[in-house]
Amino acid sequence: MTDRYAVIGNPIEQSKSPLIHTAFAQVTGQDLAYTKVLSPLGEFAQTVDAFRAAGGRGMNVTAPFKLDAFAYATDLAPSAQLAGAVNAMKFEGDKIFAENFDGVGLVRDVVHNLGCPLQGRRVLLMGAGGATRGALLPILAQGPAELVIVNRTLSKAQELAAIAQTQNSGGVPVRGVGYGDLQGQAFDVVFNATSASLTAQVPPLSTSAFAPGALAYELAYGKGLTPFLKLAQQAGVTRLADGVGMLAEQAAEAFLWWRGVRPDTRAVIHTLTVPLV
Ligand code: ATR
Image (cartoon, rainbow, N blue to C red; front, side, top):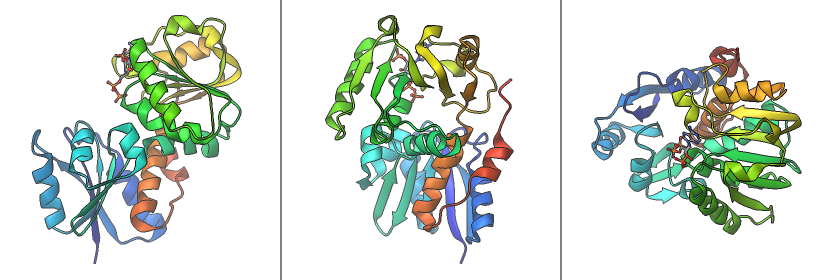
């Protein structure tokens, strides 16, 4: 019997998840159907209940329901707990297992696809919202030399740094700072996890924040050369990436979790890549 999965959101038309998971199912020979579910606002639980009652096995969750899914879950993985948000659910009887694969997808893209180890590197994470929360643990697990969280609202960066320190078994130094505190500091990897690119803005980052040979990584995807990536380019950075690989890798993690087989992401990344020009 064909197993049913879906992505739930509002709006949902823009979602690439059906394309990605359908491609994964084809290359791995898995018998599944993956569709889009538009949930009315305020009716997340009822919509998921109906999908489960019809035999649905799992769902990805996109805006604005990642917090609703957090509340709906019966079993939250540590990744979801720290992120405070859920992007994948698995249904087994009355159990709703919940994960957040965004951070692990990001790290896998950087380390595996882009060939940029984070171990021993100085890492700067811009922003202190949900995207940063999701990325914290997987980045720390790589053992960077230091992790600095920089945010427009300093208190939020400090709060996240404090949370990260409690989870940080490897003893990586973690600091939360404002943009003005970065003078004289340079980083090997700079992640833009702010939502600034969605409004074509750029955080007030100095070009001196990029160390020679740095990687500049924009978590948003499909927007070409964003203001952040332009800034990096002006600073002489030649290693530029957007979040297309992160998108594919978080999907691959969910697929592995659901089906027990890890799909190769290269074809999907190739299909979805928008040139950085
Ligand atoms: P997400 O879930 O995508 O991370 P979010 O939780 O709303 O979204 O967080 C957005 C982050 O982007 C915040 O850290 C925000 O900074 P503030 O905490 O000071 O609001 C950051 N951000 C958004 N626009 C920005 C801009 N133009 N410059 C700098 N930071 C920006």
